[in-house]
Length: 235
Ligand code: C5P
Image (cartoon, rainbow, N blue to C red; front, side, top):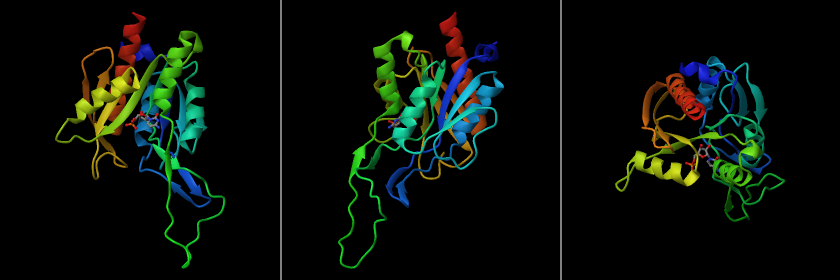
């Protein structure tokens, strides 16, 4: 049975959105609520796994029963995720990581004053935590203990050139993870709501799995797919 594959396994799950500080009172953030990550943690616990939950900023508290660590910025999340992924069987990277951060942090609040020009904020790129971790895993080999099964999330919109799934397949290849959960986003879709429609893509050629419904239902489908992947590897 699928559920048995997760008993005693260690699953690291990142959730929520990072905040990149600009000055002591302001940050650049995103609309991630943490709901999908919380649902994943609950599903993993229900399947008998132990969960290392790495929470960025969320609208809701972390679920009971997890081993909790917290992070605010992408750089803090990078450290916490890498630590949690070491010795874990699975890493699910559902956090929304800011792609950019302000190039400099101003120690005092930026003030508005009539004699000053409009402020300009320069952004620099954040590390891609997922891609970096997979490169490290490849460099270290299995002895390094970084999670052998890594699941990424991707929020995509289609356009005239390519569909959501084409972009997803390209991202799966680019990031190098074993599974990618692709969801279609747009105005009022997904962020902060309790509904989700996703397609789970597999790097090993396993046929894609579609899942729709509440974030709890989507989480159950993702955790099932993880269990199947672990069983396939074991057998
Ligand atoms: O490239 P994109 O942001 O669409 O990729 C999304 C996936 O990559 C998610 O799993 C997210 O947690 C992860 N990510 C990351 N580090 C970043 C940006 C995204 O690990 N800087």
